[in-house]
Length: 119
Image (cartoon, rainbow, N blue to C red; front, side):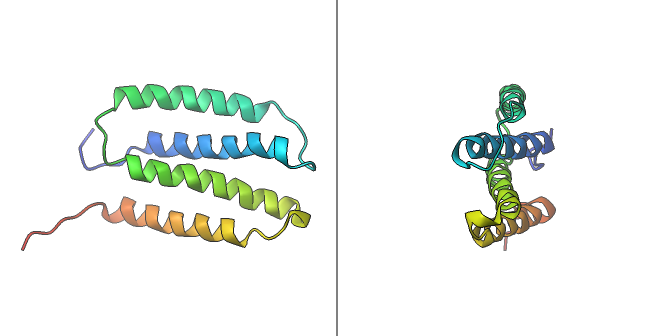
């Protein structure tokens, strides 16, 4: 793996961890949401696989900030989805806005990266 590339495995699994973590929390906190065991399975397997990738690619410093961004994109996108399913819970404007801002930042980092120009 080159030093300047963002690991797509890290991004995929951190998104999946954030999505399933918020799904697990919404099962217990939202009375309209029905119980399902699948978000817990998804969270367990995603954390297990991500830990394996983290151990193999421990020197990948470039992927840490984008991985945190995709983790929060997963959390806030599931919050927006839940707000769309149950409009009586309130507005989901903040979660959609944060998701879009983080997604735009992630696309910028992915396309341009950390380019430092010397004079």
